[in-house]
Length: 247
Image 1: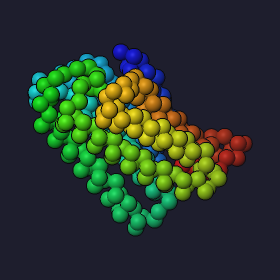
Image 2 (image 1 turned 45 degrees about the vertical axis):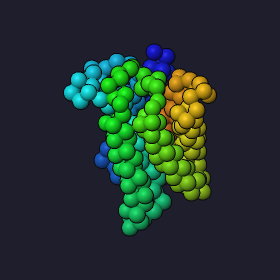
Image 3 (image 1 turned 90 degrees about the vertical axis):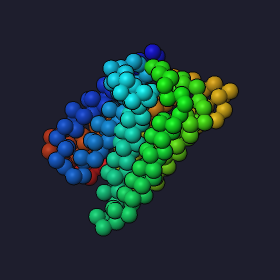
Image 4 (image 1 turned 135 degrees about the vertical axis):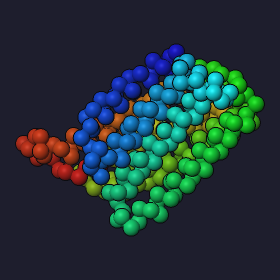
């Protein structure tokens, strides 16, 4: 499908980003951002609209279609939370991190529970199609998409707030701008998904939704690559004389 073709280059960019950042897993300041990229890659791979062995296996075991997509959405939510944590670590002292984390973890957990309940209770749960976005919405599926949209917009808005605060530092400005633009694109795509769910007559193509989400994720991966390259530049290219500490 065309959505899969659009998503494939993004998965390649994410893979390249993980390779570039492969040395960050033991670094506290950079590990969460690398986890974000990993979660996004897994989420996109699970949500890509094509038949898969995992999707068929989960359907055969549970009788509930699109659990693979649900798991993918959880990974995408977790990826957004990881970026927020990365930004918060640079802005706040350790003593203030727990209250902030509760503001993103509790709503995310509640949203995940509601989304799972919607899939389990949905009478259309036995209707398996390759593209979850093309499944006709009843009340339960509408609630699913609205919950997903609400939590993603909430998290993206929180991320933008943190990035605007970090933008005051000149050495972080380019990277934070990239994250901010990615979050704005994500909000626009999710808003289009919500509008499509509430008013199907708008006929918003799922391909355009995928394209916007892919652009957002690709920009996040590119920002993560730039962040790590700038942080290690003084060691690998001293002649560049680049500042350390970029996000």
